[in-house]
Amino acid sequence: MILTIRKAQPDDIAWVNAQYQQVHFQLSNYSNELIVIAEANGEKAGVGRLVTVDENTLELGGMYVPESFRRFGVARTIVTFLVAQVTGKTLFCLPFEHLQHFYESCGFKPVADPGRVPPKVLQKWEWCNQVYPHKTLLLTRQV
Image (cartoon, rainbow, N blue to C red):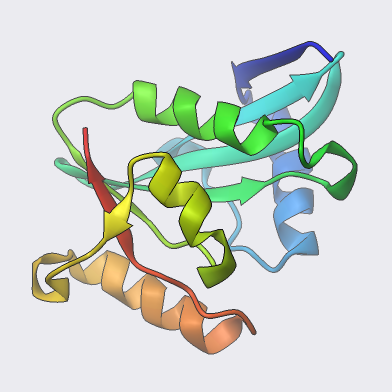
């Protein structure tokens, strides 16, 4: 399998948001996000994004890989690509609890002091824990 990552273009947003609707993720806003699409042998195989929170903070999220492409390293490739786009900022990630090991293997750690987390990130974390059946974690990484 040949896996490539590319930045989403405006005409990709309908596909991106269709993926997010399937799993009840918040929809993407192309103007405030860096969205990437993984392709396996030319077929769309996953999506992820960096959302700008403020000038020093981003949220890594929207990670979705369709079932047929799981276990091929698609998610890790997307995370690695997105993290490489960032320097000198704080990244937050709000993964489901069962994905904690994966995100920790990508350099994320549990937030030690939620009082230092931007309100916008805390609000989304609270929203996630109210909406999704899986517990959502609050992780961070300096890059």
